[in-house]
Image (tube, rainbow, N blue to C red; front, top):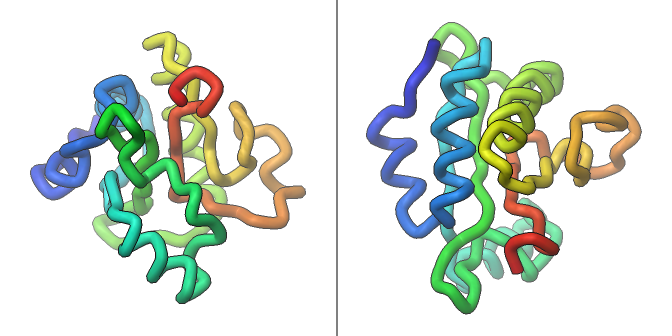
Length: 140
């Protein structure tokens, strides 16, 4: 079983507490370690990511909403202590996120399928496997 390190915890500052709870539970459930690489972003940071084509939208859930909280996180898979970019690793971790969210009654969406499950991720034209966000309809 894995646990969040201090670097991951620092990235969760300003993130909605329900998503933090999902992250904390997912790390306990996943067979593949991960670390959180991004929680909240400023509008200026998001603008740079869009310009660099690392993001496709200025309507990012990382940018704190009216409640002052970010509603998205990014993470990287860690296999034997090294960052992995294998899609299958992100699917496995996403399954732990969905299991955690179900246990906790929190509605999430995963960037690998842009839906509320891992189903259909292979057909997705924009695979953002390292991204999890609170579902906007439940967390405006």
